[in-house]
Image 1 (tube, rainbow, N blue to C red):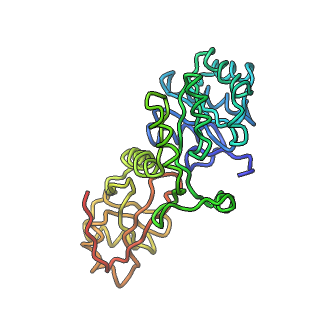
Image 2: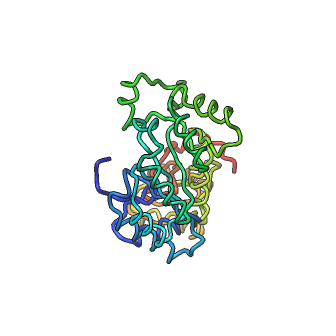
Image 3: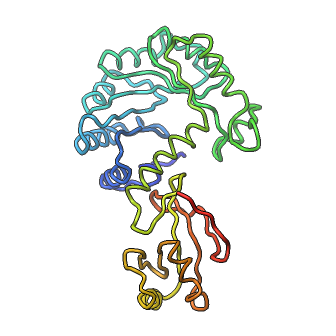
Length: 307
C-alpha cells in the first residue's frame, strides 16, 4: 500500500524471471493484474503482458483491474500487447454518474478494440447503480463480498460496517446486496464472489496446484494444499550419520541449513533413536514463495493424518 513494488502472488518481483518462476511453480493458465493501481506504471504493465504472452502463448488469459478510465491510446497499447480482459473499478462516489463518464468512454473503446470488458466492485449499498449501468451497456459485473482486513478495518468501522459473525471477516449485509441485485435481474451478467469462495475454492486450488508441482518425495500434501513433513534440528552432518545408520533412504530426507526435513512417518519411527540428541517436530507449511510455516507440532503429540 502506497509503495511502488510488484509481487507475483507472494513472490517479490525484481526481474522478469521472478514472474516466470512463479507462473511455472503453479502451472498458471492465466494472470490477473491488480494493485494498487497498475496503470500508474503502464509501461511496466505492458512489458509484463508481452512477457507472459511470449512465454506461455496467446492462450494464456490475462485480465487487468483498474480504478482509472484509460484513454484510447493506453487501451490500444494494452490490446496490442495481448490483454484479453479489463475490469473497471469506479469509486463509489461516482456510481450514480457513470453514464457519460470517463468509465463509459473507456468501456466502449475497450469493447470496440475487442477486449472483454466489465466492472468489478465490492458489494455495497449503491452497487445496484453500477449493475444497472452494466446491464444497459451489455457487459458483466462482478460483485465481491466486502471483507475486513488489516488495511481497511478502521475505515470500514468509521463507515458503520461490522463483521457478519465471529468466524469470518465478512462484512454484514454485503452478501444481501449482491443477492438482491441478482434476484432483481436474473438474466443479467451479474456474478457474486463470496469471501468463502475466495478462500475455500480459489486460494485452495492454487495451493493444491503449487503443492503437487513442488512436493518432494517425502512431502505429504494436505487437503488444504499445504505440505506436511518432519523436521530434525541440529548439526546436519551428525543427523545425516544417524539417518544412514538407521538405513533411511536418501529420497526420504533433505539436508538444509541447521536442520533436516524428512518424511513425517520416518520421523515417527526413528524418534526413539534421536530424541536424546536432537530437537524434532512435525511441520506444515504453505507451498508458496517463502514456504511460510502454518504449524509446528511437538513430536510427542499424536497425529491422525489422512490424505
